[in-house]
Structures are given as structure tokens and as C-alpha cells.
Image 1 (tube, rainbow over the protein chains, first blue to last red):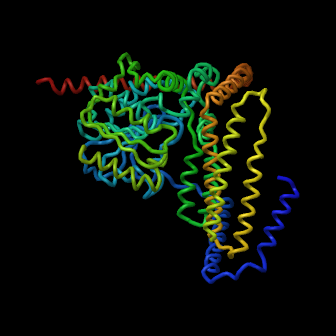
Image 2: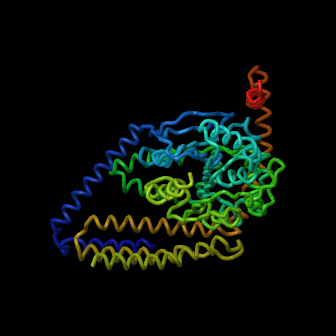
Image 3: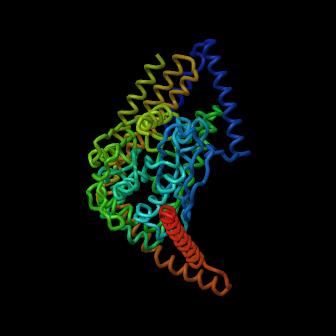
Length: 375
Length: 169
């Protein structure tokens, strides 16, 4: 824009606003007073965040460590255990920490499930180092998950369990359920877990074999460093940080909002590295070859056939999920051999499906509501 | 009145922004030999008209905090529009190819540097009689394998004990 044109516009603006403007009504004055008060509280909270930052208290639901294997931990949460069948919750390996599912009191999926009387077990895969670079998807499916399921059955004293997979945890646990018919899985739930990777969106395009050499990447770096994982997820939604900060400033006067923001922000900036071999197999077999959905995957010498899953299946997709789009998640319904299966699509994105106010309204009651009569 | 003019502003801005975003997408995907388009050709009239409308708005009614809410909505829509434009651009084969090529170049440059750096650090630590990361990782792996073996022994013992319990005395 030319300097002269901008000056003309400024002159018109300032000439139009002045003596000719009418006096403000009492309502407008009150509104401005409220706005000034909000701004004062914004500055106060901003000062508090910058000058005296406090570490947010996350993961406060009481739990007990049941079992550990290398970096992985199995936790059992305190609950009335009204429902007999325990739940083994399998989240994503790497990428981020699992306390997102237990973020804050009255804002926690795990707290909700334990309040509903479920015997809830969380598998925390752990934070990986260079010594874990040989950990593969196959090891998780054939060694770790069977062991975790066994520990759940032993400690709960039951002879069946439900498996709930979220995000990457869903296809991995689907492989486990499909290849271990000896493990008594009563129900299988998939929350935002990609199954048909031909419909997985941007990550599918960026990681396709035409453009991404996973072997070369893993052979060079050994693992996928946490910073690279962070860069990948930031790139998929580059305006997220700007939008987050604009909304933070807008709501900074609200102490509850600030508390929630600090907890979520802590999680959103704490990324976990991928073990090298895990990443290699995950990208090659799932993203590039789509072997799980096409029935070409083999784990521990056993073919992985989703049709071998015959227990009741519940699948939850998120309408605005750009990491695991709904059509990619829904594909499990057509692939399993279960007679009883149900798919629902809820508002929200990949994270807001399971964490946040929207999740508490839409998702959590649906999941606990479906599981209760099946447990 | 304020709502009508604000809505008009948004509608006008949306229309101009869509045209501008299409120009950006064409710019990103066009070949280098093509003459670069002037992206600001679409933005100048938007900003000018927007400022004129705001000036008219202020002269007709007193400013209220609702304007701040409208400004926030404007920002949200602006960010959302940018998000869509960037998403469309990044969803193209061209972008994926560019990203793959950048990564390939990084790996080509990184691999020998990393290898040389790792070797230098190993030699330095050896000279100082200190363990390297590779050695520590190897020790950690051995500990994990030992844990595995102990677990298998525990499983075997457990199975034997259960069999003994079941056998008639």
C-alpha cells in the first residue's frame, strides 16, 4: 500500500471519529469498565505466569505401579471396581506423555472411568533412549502387550479384560488381539486409532515411500529425536501456536482457563523420541504399505488378520481429526469379524476427542456408557 | 448498524482473502521459470476497504467492547483461513516432494558429520578413560536382557509350582 493512500485513509479515519461521534450510553460505559477489569486481570495473570511460574500438577488420580519392564510401566488406578472386567488402556508409544488422559481433577478421562467404577489399567510405554533403538512394533505386539495383559488378569483376579487403544495404541493393540486368541479379550475399543492408512491424510502423503526414505532416516539418526517429532506435529498445523496464544491472551483474565492452559501447554511441549526400529516398522508396514488393513502383516510368525477379532468392538472417531481422519478410523468396523460392532463420530480433533471440556461432554460418557453393560 | 457494517467487512474480507489465497497456492506450485505474481495486489484493496468501513463505523456509533470481540473473531477467521491455505498447500504432491528433497539433503549433509562427530567423541572419551554413550547403551541393553531372562525363569518356576500343586500327593 502506498504511503500517500495510507495517510489519506488515516485522515479519513481520524476526521470521522471526533466531535461528530455521539456520547456513550451507560451500558457501553459499564462494558468498558468490565473490559478494563479484564485487562487488569490479564496483566496480573501474565505477570504471574512469567515472574512466578508454577509447575502444573498433572496426573493426580491415585494409582499404583503394578509392573515394569525396561521403560514401560503398568499402572492400576484406585476405583470402586463395580464393573468386574478390567480395562487395559494402550495409548500411543512415543510422541507424547500419557498424562493427557489424567490432566487435571475434573478434567481427566481416567478419573471419569474410575468414578464410573471401572478397574482401569494404564500402559505407560515410557521415555526412550538410544538403548531402546532395537524396540520394534513386533516386540510390542508379541512380548510387551501379552505380558501386560497377563499382569492385568493376575492382579485383577478376573479371567477376561477389555482393551482400549487410543491413537497409535489402537492399531498396535488390534494386532495383539488379532494374533493372540488365547488372551481372553472381552471387548475392544478403538479411539481415534488409524486403521486404513490409505486415508490417513497429510502424514500419509509426507511419509509415502516416493518422498520419504525411512531406512535412510533411521540409519542416519538411530532414532527419531523428540525435537523432530515435535517439528512434524507442529508442521501439520502451523497456525496452532498462533491461535493458542491469541486465545490465551483473550482468556487470560480467567484463572480457570489459565490453569487448564498451563497443564495442556506442559503436555503439548513435552515430546518423546521414537525408537529407531519401531519408527522404521511403523512407517514402512503401516503408513507406506498399509499392511494391517490389507491383511499382509505378520507379527511373531503369526499373520495379523483383523477378521480374527470377534469380540464386541466399539470405535470412536473425531470429526475434525487431521491425524487420524474419521474414515481412516472407521475402517476397523468393516475389517473385524465381530458380530457386535458400533462406530460413532464425535465433535473434536485428535486430542480434544479425549481431553478437555468437549471430551467430558461428548466422548467420556459414550465410552463408559458402552463399556458398562459389556463389563 | 455496527453489526451490519462489521458483517459487510467480514464478507468482503473473506471474498478477497479467498482470491488472495488462490494466488498464493498458484505461486507455491508454479514452476520457477514463470513470472512471479504480486500477492499484495489482492491484499491492498482489502485493507483499504476494511479501514474505510471501520472509520465509517466509528463515526456513526460510539466504540464499545463488542468491537474487540469482533476484532477477535476477525483474527480467528484470519488464522483459520491461513490454516486452510497452508493445509491445502502442504497437501500437494509438490510440497511433499520438496519436503522429501530437503530431508534427503539434510541426511546427506548430516550423515558424515554425525559419523565424524561420534567417532571424535568416542576417541576423546576413551582417552579420558570415560564411558561413551554407546557403551552405556550397551550396558543398559544387557541389563534389559538379564531382566528378560529372570522373568522367563520366574515364569518357568511359576508353571512348575502350579503343576506340583495340582499333582495328587
